[in-house]
Amino acid sequence: MENEIQARAAHLAGIREKAEAEMARMGIDAAFIDRLVETFYGRVQAHPRLGPVFDGRLAGRWPDHMEKMKRFWSSVAFKNGAYGGKPVQAHLGVQNMTPELFPQWLELFSQTLTEIAPGKAAHDWFMATAERIAKSLFPQAQVRYQAVTSQNRMPLVQNGTVDLECGSTSNTASRKEQVDFANTTYITEARYAVKKSAGIESTEQLAGRTIVTTTGTTLVPRLRKLERDGLKFNLIMAKDHAESMLMVAQGRADAFAMDDNTLAGNIAMLKNPQDFRIVGTPLGREPIALMLRRNDAAFKQAVDAEISRLIQSGELRAMYDKWFMSPIAPANVNLNLPFPPSLETAFAQPNSDPAEAYAMP
Image (tube, rainbow, N blue to C red; front, side, top):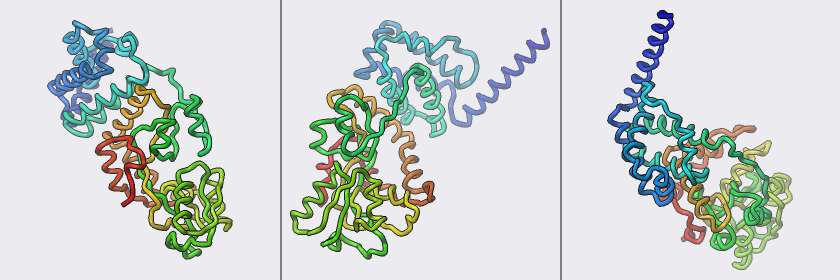
C-alpha cells in the first residue's frame, strides 16, 4: 500500500512538473494569474449586462470570489490541486446566466488576454480552457440547420423559423427595415463570371448579350440601373446561384453577375474551373453579414461578441485563408482572392454599416 501511495505521489509530481514547464514556456506564472483574474473580473463588474448578473450572486463576496478564481486557474494551469470546487455547477447557479451571455463573457476574457497575456500561446491556452467551460455549461444547446434560398431567407428570419442566416447576404439599408445584421464578416465587389473563350473583359462588352443573376439578390436592382443608364442586354433570373452558374457553363447566358466571392466559389465547383474567370469593373461594393431578427439587441450583441472574438483570436482570418487562398475540393482550385484592405478596416473597427456606407467613388 505504501508503495502505491509513493507511486501515486511521484506520478502527480511528474504531472505538476510537466505543467509548470509548459506554463513557463508560455510566460505564465502565479503573478500573471493574479493579474488576469483581477483585471477580468473587474471588467465583468463594470460590464452593462454581465455585471448585474454576477453581482446578483456575488454582492459583498467579490474578494472571496477573486481568490477562489485565482486558485481555480492556478490548479488548471499548474496541476497543483489548489482548487477543489466545481466551477460548472457554480456558474449554473448564477441566476439569469443564459446561453447568449457566454459569448460576451468569452469576448471580455479574450480582450483581457489580448491586452495582458505574455504571448499568443498563453492567450490561446486560456481561451481554449474558457471555451470548454462555456460548452460544458450548456451541453443541451443544439444547432439545427435549415436550408434557405435568396427568395425565402428573409421571411424565414422574420417569422422565427431561422435565428441566424449564414449565407452570402448583403447588408443594405432597405433590408435593415425588415431584419437586422451582425457585424461585417466580408466585403464583396459585384462583377461577372464569364467563359475565358468569350473574350469578355468589361461591362460594355455585354451590350446585346445575355446576363443571368439570382432572383432576390441585390444584383437585380444594380443591373436594372445599368439598363436605365443605357446599356442594352437581355436579363434573365435563376432560382439560385448554382443554376445561374450552370447557365453560363451551358452557354445559355454570357455572364453571371454576382458578388465576387460567390462567383469564385461557384466557379470552383465546376468540372472545368480553369475555363472561367471573373471580369469587369465592380458594379458595387457591399458588406456581407449574418442576418438575424430585428429588435433583439441581446442576441445581436451575443453574435457580435463571438465575431469579435474570432477576429481577435485570428480564427476568422485563418478561415478566410482556408477558403479563399488555398485549394478547395473537389477540383482543388485556389480562388486566390487576397484579403481586401476594406475588410482589414472592418475588422479593425467592427461595425454593421449597410452597403450605402460603401458607395463606390
